[in-house]
Image (cartoon, rainbow, N blue to C red; front, top):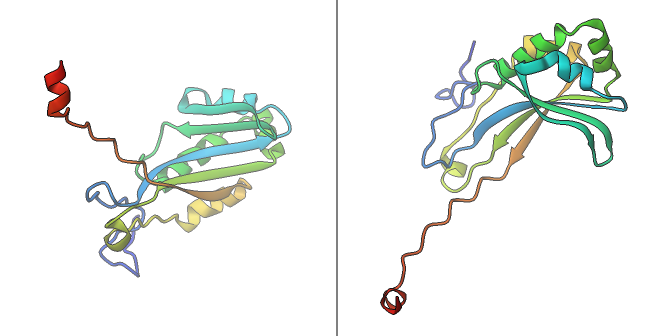
Length: 169
């Protein structure tokens, strides 16, 4: 259940605030990332079509990396997404759960796009995770990571053709 923020009672924790000119920080998604010395194919197969696989295989100095997004939960609420991931993981059959336990890193990566301009002064993004969700994450020996991405650059505006160029044609 969302609660009021003590520091900002007008904000409800766990919710994304409305956009003002696209300049507020914005919750993007939660990725589940696993690193292992062994293949993570078994976990990817068990997750099946409930997830979108972003990467599965070697990456730079990581022998095996599995990065996925889930198609469940409220896509505006990181807690709902993490709970949906926990449901999937807790339901893994024994062989896939053994692969989970052998993973050298298990993380839920909460992605946030940072704010620019006015939002630095007037906007806030307040997200929270309940103790129950944190307990589930801990029981899975996973960590929570927060990644803040720079704001996307604005689309370039089309330049009007000069009168000189238009006359030459």
